Every structure is written in structure tokens, then in C-alpha cells.
Image 1 (spheres, rainbow, N blue to C red):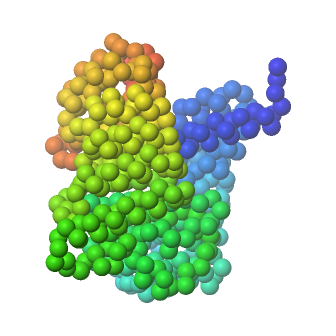
Image 2 (cartoon, helix red, strand yellow):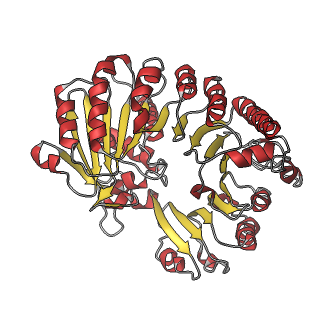
Length: 490
């Protein structure tokens, strides 16, 4: 029975929404290895489906998936009926444009064409100099603005410029590495997405231990930053912060700052050390209790615990257990602190988290104590230093494969692919109830390199029930010995 075209379109939109929502497989939010084969297969069904896929993909281009979709975009100099996305309907993404003492970004935007539907510009302002070239901004420009090592005046004046030009809708996201008073000033404008690094003490929060990243989301734009427990009460109440349609907000903070914000007497000296610890524990419990009731928190990332005399790690993890075992909207968890029974027990009871990232030393316990009981978790991301460790993980996974319901496991390797052929052989010889195995190689000539999607190649094969992806700067030796498909340069 043939269905009406509008139903086919609706079905494809649902499928594509699912694909785009669940990829990329993220390297801490910066990297993807997914390929575009599935979109191509749907487009080849017939001419009607080709047009339908084309219309859907034109609306799906984002900053995070541009590396995947850019091969679909028609070249302005060589038009083609076979490209899924016409040039005039496309979104072009310009990444890593920086203003650091000069305005070289002007040369980049001067080349931009008004014929393109949208141009998304990722602009990093790391200079105290005023931003030039604003008169060159076109109607089809959209900005992700990142401010670091620049003055509060520069931040405010640039956002104010967009406000006066009635162009605040051109700002898609703002990333701030500043004092909280700058944040509260920016909240007076109608900005829907803010990523905040609290540099109140003059140190980038990303460089500290005990760091916690919290991400909040509200589809109706009702997020209220002053209610998110991340800032000192006296700072938040000092500003009349209007509710101006903030839909997404992420903050990098740390445990010490959280305790300080919950109890303004935290940094005062106590004659009784035990009394101080009791106050800290009370503040931590209050924070966890309120966070557990927050329905806008969708992502939690916990860094490595350093020396932390203010509160014992087991008491910190007891709080996380309470958070994880409570009904919540958290979808993603990255935990690189000390994982103990509290974390395993909390995760085993959780029914919202779908994506989990952990160090490899906790892999065995994660499988035995969490994944056999929790069927909600679908994607596991594992960080390790030696590919031999992966082989041991896969061997152990054989026993539990039929008892878990993962969609994918991603292994990131910071050493050579020395044992990767053994891993592939094992995948060939056993049937795993897992759809995807991903191996990401981050080692190049004995130097750890910063992951850059443009420097990697993706290879793929199908082994029994699973798809196996290998992402590497160089072609691993195993590729030359097996029937791999070279998917693309990423």
C-alpha cells in the first residue's frame, strides 16, 4: 500500500530527528565520527524521496554537524542536480575566527556570499580592542560569540550593538569566561543560550580540579539563572535580572565554589574543624536536594577530584547517589572523579540518563553493577591510555553482552593502535548485542594531539551484528588487512 507523500515526509523527519539528536558521538562536545551514509540511502529511494531528504537536511545544518553535512552542499561554482543541499538554501559554518589584537576576521566575512541562506560564524574575542567590521554584517549572519581575556566593557558594548540594531536574534550563543557581574549584565538582553565559566578568582575554571559542569534547558525560555544555585546569594540578588527568554544555560564551577555559594560563611575560619565539616556537608546536601528537584538540568559532568580537605570524597559521592537515584531529566553524565558504590548504586536506579562517560578502570564494575540492571543507558564512552585495556574489556563483555542493551561503546585511545587488530578479531569471532563499536585514536607520532575533525579519517566495517568505526589521523595497519570501507575524511 502506497502512503501519501506527506506521511513519507513525516516519517523521514522523525527518523532524521532521531539521527541528528543522537549524533555526533561527542568527544567532550567537540568531535564527531558519524558518517552520512544513512541519509544517502534514503535519498536514493526515488526522486520524491530525494527532494524530501533535501528539504529536511537544509533545516538540519548546525555547528556540531557541519562536518558531516558539508559534503551534501552544492558548490557555488559548479551547480549540480545530484547534491542534496542547494547552495542558496544552505548554512555555511565559519569556525575558529579570532579577534586577538587585530581584526583579521574581517577578511573572512568579506568573502561571505549573501546568496547563502545562513552563515554561522564562531567568533572568539580575546582582545580588549573594540571589534571592527561590524558594518559588514549581512542579514544572513548568525553568531556564536566567545569572550575570553577581554574587558567587561568590550563584552557589553558588542552585545549592546546587536541590541540597538534590533539584531539580537543574530546571536545564537554566548560563551563567557568572566566575573559573574558580566554574566548578570548580559542577561538583561534577550540571549537564548549562554555558556559561562566563572573567572571570579582570575583562573579559568577548566584548568581546575573538582570541577563540575551543569547544563540546563527550558524550551519555553523560562530559565532563571539566579535560581540555579551556582552563584553567591548576595551577588544574584544584587541584580534585577529579568526573564528574557533564556532557553539554554551551562556553567562550569567547582565543589568549593558551590559550598561557598550555599553558605557565605564557608571561607571563614572555624575554631572547631569538625564544625566546619558539618557545615560543609549540610551545604552540599542542600545543593544536591535542590538540584534533584530541578527539572531543567539535562547534563552533568564531574571532573577529577584533587586534594579536597573541605569534604570527604565518599560524602560527595553519597550526594551524587541521591541525585542520580532521584527522578530527573538528566540525559548525559560524564564522571571522572573517584567512582565508588554510591555512584554505581545511583546509576543502577536511574531511569533518565542515556549517555555515560567514564575512565576505563571503572569499565568492569560499570558493566556488572550498572548496565545489567539499567536498560536506559544506551551509549558508553570510555577513556583509556592503552589499547590492550580495550581487548580485556571486550573479553569481559562477552559474558554480559546478552544482558545489556547498549547501542554503542566508544573507546578513546591516547596511545598507539598496537592491539587494535586483536580487538577487531575478537569482534569478528563473537556476536555482541551492541550496534556500534567506535575506536578513536588520539595519538600521533608519540605526541598527544588536540582532536581536530579535519585531521581524521573514518573507516567502517560491519562485523556480525555490529558496525565498527575507526577514526585515526593515519591509516591503522589493520585497515590494510581487512575489508574496510573508507567512509570519508572528517
